[in-house]
Amino acid sequence: MSGFQVPANRAPIRALNAGWGAIQALGIARPALTREALVRSARRQSGLTDLGADFEDAVTRHSLRLLLESLEWEARLHPFGRMVLRGTLVRSLVTRMRLEQLSKEHAEIPGMPVERPVFIAGLARTGTTLLHRLLGCEPRLRPLLSWEGLSPAPLAGKEARPGRPDPRVQLARTAERGLRYLSPGFFAIHPVEADGYEEDVLLQDVSFMSPTVDATLAVPTYSAWLHAVDQRSMYRYFRRLVQLLLWQRPGTYLGKTPHHLENLPALLEVFPGARVIVTHRDPAKVVPSFCSMMAHARKLFSDEVDLPAIGQQFRDKQLKGVTDAMEARRDLPEESFIDVHYADLMSDPMKEIRRIYDFLDYELRPEAVAAMDAFRGANPKDKRGVHRYGPEDFGLTREGLDRDFAPYRERYAIAREE
Image (cartoon, rainbow, N blue to C red; front, side):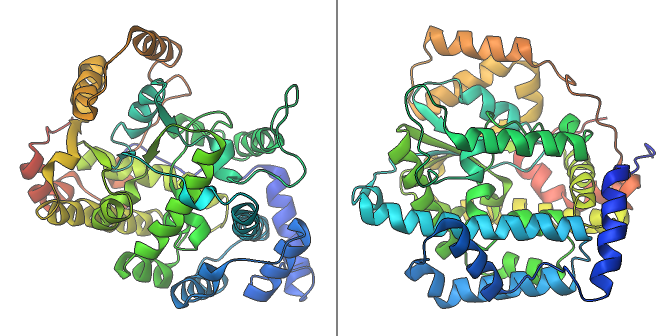
């Protein structure tokens, strides 16, 4: 056991939660998490009204209803967490309205081609962030930037102009500073930087089939439904947001999230011609590493962080991801996929990059190599701190994880890490 502990919230946040919680116990100043209240706030904030036909379909209505019910009755949010999540939900609604408005004003947006996108679809903690940032050095690839993920649509009347940066960047920098203050240890696990590359989940959350809520909160009813439902509707909306991004900055879209593993048939149906990079690592390292990251994240929203429960949740979640992916790939064209092992990526990253470039049918040009070398030189391992964790910290064992993930390890010949 490594002695992993969830760091306490900073004193001002504890004081805010205590004071605000006391007021809310009297039925005062409790931010409403209802569909009607959120829509009103989004319309007030955006000055728009049209949420699009997608918002009224049965799947989206059910998604939002179940999400809000689970947040209200299961997540045990503290007041600060409730406020942050409410703001996130309102921002998603504003994004939907801005997408509808821009699609009316610019008829080319819905017809934007999404040609041969590239997706990284390995489990979290398998080298996906390193690979994402190295491939982002390729000029032809167009990754999602963190500030775009937070605000995919240009702000009305505040579009970027020569000599004036996009105001969305400043909003993201403010959010980055806030996260650094609230959870500095999180950056040793996963750096979140306003100008850095981020995961597709930021766009997928806009559909209210939210991988982020599923990962960061204890919402068992919502999570069980999310992992069982057909997510093609979410992927279709995700594609609309990718088109919006490509309209603003063209290129070959480069996406990343572990959530794709559970949804490979939907991903390839909605993005025909997509190429998928699947990363692999010893699950006995991956599962507790992801647990530690989510324990840090959960503290931002709730005072109840049950480490054994987190261990069970993410053991099940990650086992489902690799199992669904193995089953799906039996029926999907193998030429759509390339497998990359974490050990190989760590020992010789440029060798793996060359393999990936061959898979993509790209020429690896000197300027891309130089950019990748510069990134690696500026970002050594453990630059932001050492990340310590062990399976026992989360009620798990090495032997149990070896047993549970044995078919996956055998299928991809995954080396054991000590």
